[in-house]
Image (cartoon, rainbow, N blue to C red):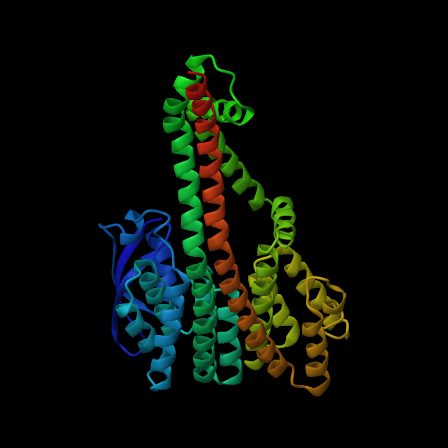
Length: 402
């Protein structure tokens, strides 16, 4: 889409400069006029945006970028800096070019009369439904500064928790990946040289050695085919889980993976209780809070549960009607929510549940990492032991016969 550099004046006579995207010159002019601006000059941009030269995987706004923006914006709001000026100040400080561009456009829209939540809703890649709805509640209740500060706190806590989980799992994943690569290299290049003499000797080889030679020869002779097959299999799996049916089957299957399934359940429960608690505390009604939480929970099974819960609430039933029937929801969660709902302090109960299951999640991750390390060492030792025995046994037999 063409880009146009413009210079215009607003109702106060202030000169504004910027860039606008439009299909043609006339549409660009009409768009600026709709914003209440008087166009002074409008020329097609000779340079492409920096974003157009970025690689697709780099052209995105990370969770960390949004968290940093939230904190900086809340600080400026707390200092009574006007909204537009706050956004422009943060935009100048951010290093992410895409977020910088988005914030510039958001500031222009807010300056022309659009609400902050509506302006940010146009950029779902940067601002989630959760983020937008929190802002909307703040604008509706006149507590934007308070809500923004609370949102920044919640996002930082959520980011810290996820960062700890990812950090704890990094070492085991790297070690496992290294084991697979080294094992592949050994079986493809090293073992064939060691077993070549054994095959030429004509000695009857033990079954373990025969299996080792067969696997080694297969991997050596079909090296390219194996790489292509693995690549296609991964691509097919990625495509499948992006389909509606595939996503639902995979999301449900993940919950039954030994050890990791329980870990994932805790992650989803923390997301549900934290998001619901934050939204309700900020003044968003329960049906809307359930709808937003369903969009961000990240698992089809829990998403369906939240959608059914929203329907029950709209029909006048308790928020725990569906929760109590779900085996994937701990009894403690539904029982405490019943108490919170009956006492009118549901948001406090959700905050306590979030705190409890966040600690549980961190403990489970720490336990898992502690258990994985010795298991990896045992697996490595076992693999090396089998390989040594399979090679040394026939060699010892040949030496004895000789």
